[in-house]
Length: 351
Image (cartoon, rainbow, N blue to C red):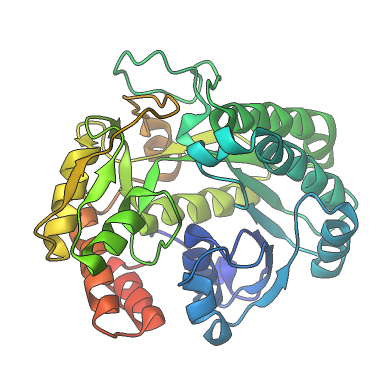
């Protein structure tokens, strides 16, 4: 991962969203690096749930709290006294944002505001990294890969909430944290996949559940393309960026994309076929019937700036990403321990 283990050992970290898929992997990475992690998130939302499965064996201080609960967020930030903040908690699903736009905007925009307000009095802060999304850009579906300076936008409520969060981050960086010498930046990750995601209404978990039943998964937009990447590639970027910000002492650059190589663009159907085959499902997918809220059909991001700034690039190509993901789920389905599977892939990936 090109991380510096001595940087993380003993460092006080505040992590939000640790009961989610990426957050659970981040918890393991940070704990195994020897960081002193305080984490908070909503209670696990799915059954099974990766954090619920592994959490009692991961050495972090875990709390349940809602970003919209100002007193709870304030108290956790005060007690944690973090040096590094990794804000990953969010309402992260496009279709859910259509069902509950108010909750999505409240969690993603005002939740971030609440967190940043709670952090302002902390004298120990060295860097804050806010995780947003590859969907923050005004996507006219030209097929071009978005660089960080592309216009922000968002048609659906989820994308709009994340684009607005980017504006909040810049405002707080320039108005409050920058003058204090505390770097505040954003990270825009691609479509992250990997073992242990059991979220509802998301492609890979849906494929896993379908394989368990020996049934095809229903795809709304099988021809849509996304910047698929493995969770370890994405998290190596996040942690590397946080380390860089703390060492540099300035949010320069103020945001970075983390995604696959730009020529590795697969459709939803191609990903489904590969994962389904890896899980031994002979009936992988079928076209879903009915009408659905609109989603962008093409999305690509350009990670050249991360390569230049951090010497970061994905270690796993798209075929390896799909193979590692399918293997994790296949092994889990055969009774292997989730945390052992995670640590085995982390060791294989390397730091």
